[in-house]
Length: 123
Length: 123
DNA sequence: CAGGATCCTATCCGATACTG
DNA sequence: CAGTATCGGATAGGATCCTG
Image (tube, rainbow over all chains, first blue to last red; front, side):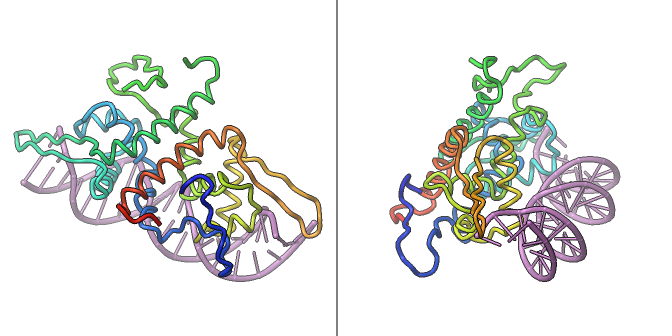
């Protein structure tokens, strides 16, 4: 949505219909901004990580939710998944270009909020 | 990993403890990235809006969730609320400086996703 | 118009158990 | 190690009615 690009034209009754739930992007947005999606994306911004590393990294996440979140994000083309058929198996996750693209504003978001909430102690 | 924001105070044995659920920022993050929070913030970026305007603007939101979301965001200091004691009453909402600060990466996020999903054809 | 109060349902999500 | 499957409790969220 471009800055001041509120259509605001058509008097078809709906004056501010800007973003809808039926917009295809909102599905991705929902996944990204899901309870764990944002943390997964932020975690993967620094390194590719294996499943258990992600689990350790993101405090409080259950294996179920991690797997579920990863599946959704992979389906959306935000993260890739590489399986090495060893014993025991190793699965590594990382961000696609799209994922990195999306992770950037997310990190910025988190950073701004954190900075705001800890004034003085940061930087 | 440490994007500059996280203390990363060596927890006992925890190697990747970057962002936790117990971080005070994650509460705000949760509100912002709640199902409707992001849309409210994006909606308010262009204009201050009244309650019913927000409801019209954000397709699919119920009054309950709008009120609830606005309350949470106001409590976090992201949006302000102005009541004009007229009849009928008018309540206008807008972004605080913090809210605008946070809304920026959110808009960027939405914009990047939208752009990716509609290559070539701008809506 | 702006919402609170209630009720009720869908889903989220954790715990547990099981598989390759 | 990296999951899947299932169950059940908690909670998010919608619908409806009601109030200032």
